[in-house]
Image (cartoon, rainbow, N blue to C red; front, side, top):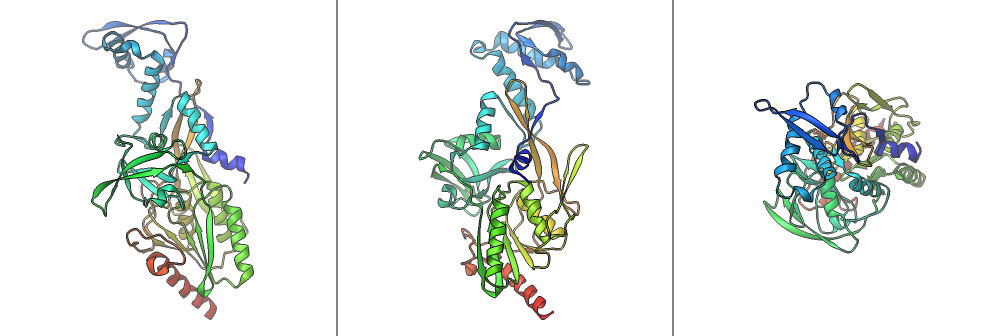
Length: 420
């Protein structure tokens, strides 16, 4: 699929059907009856869009307007906050009431910044973040990133950012605090369960470029591919790695390492599944409130008979979980490692009329056998823990029991295949 289609899957810009209260420039005057015991008329000036509330069944907006009136009349510093700021705050509160860590409201300024972040480069630490148990957590540090260099690991909890507590902080808000100009420093307070305490780590921001993959032919005719991201170049680069490796010597099996892979484009994961599964095989289903869309393998199944083992860990998320889960559901691969992150929802950016937007969860991923990924993750067929602070590389098998187990399983499959 082209980059336009993949971009649509990453961030969708759709018209929002829910109309929210907006600020008018002329100043309408409305009388609203609020309060059950002592009804009174509240005069709300400078507000339009009240008629939109009439479409919401059995909702009493009187409390909202009563609060609006009390703030305007009695809040000590009411004259320092304009009406538009209060409306943005109200919409933000509405969105936060959903209790979804991946749904967030952006005012026009924040929305513009978000658009730039999606399309451009930035100064940061190179770590994918998420929420676990309502706490900000590192899903994975990217290879070669400042976060990786200082030793951040998947599963590390970020307690504060430059002394700002991350309690009740949304992921995008945390990202905005961490990012900044290149060559400046951000200080994170990190809690790691193996430490049993909080440590402060200062990280120098750099321009972040996401790596794609490394490959290596190991002994016993095993091709090892470590895929770091499902970015727009991943399919092409993986195809080249496969072609180059198979042209050098006979390949008896493949280890696909998806550890610390935070995901990326769904289309790339579906494309890769098509190399290992028959054309037309269900890869994943996008299930919304009333609609669902099935994504089917569409490749030529060129690697259909090549033995395959996939390695995952708690840094494997989203597209990485979709590919690994689909391959296992169709008995095409066994999984080795640790339980994956469990990022299984889809967000779309819903644009509002004033340039603000809501990034909102609209569906979740369902694997071929019916498992919902969100909050669950994948439990490997062979659960193997990693030693503390061990980096996974193909050349350090003795220090990498997960890779060692994957090679052991694959070697048995290759031996059986050759005997047959």
